Image (tube, rainbow, N blue to C red; front, side, top):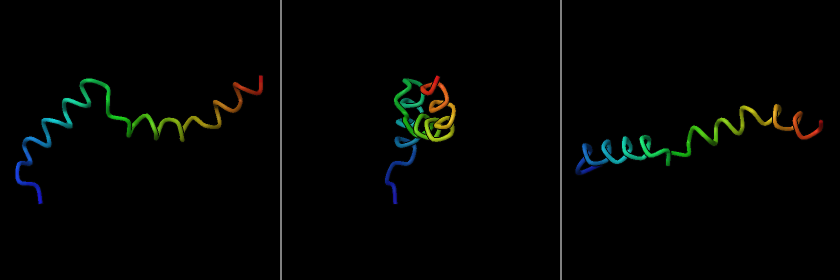
Length: 42
């Protein structure tokens, strides 16, 4: 239970705006892992 959900939303928005949210980056690494392996093999 969050006492101040608005504060949490503001912090998440700030992290997204500053590029510090790493969740999407981690999923992109998993998604493009095969592509990265092909590039290293060349």
